[in-house]
Length: 176
Image (tube, rainbow, N blue to C red):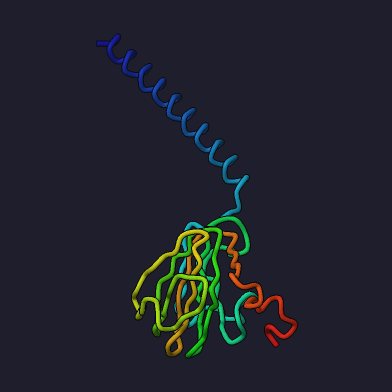
């Protein structure tokens, strides 16, 4: 009986030592991994009332507003933004190097693929609709009524117009 007690005690000590080593090793490698990547919060949230809206970047026509909900769209990594557009707002044919995921929050968003803007084509996306477009696919959109869309993807976000003349960031009066 004494031998059994000593054997069980030794196994328990060995198991504890192995568990401690494994935990230390995992913590060390996790810490090393975390230090090489930007620190993202473990969780977060915001209500529509506390979203910080501002002018959309110059690559968009004047009149739209943007709120960054998560991440940094200009950097590598995940991002979530909302784009608020007035009635009739147009986003001319363009493409992105990464997949763009779009959820319509309010209003009606019209979405079409192609090289030339044609408001007789495309899908009508009422509030609640989700859509996505793959990398390098030419597409365009317009808003019916004030419309808010949520866009998420992997950055850096880049928008390249099919016709460079459509790029408002190239115009001296883009956001005045």
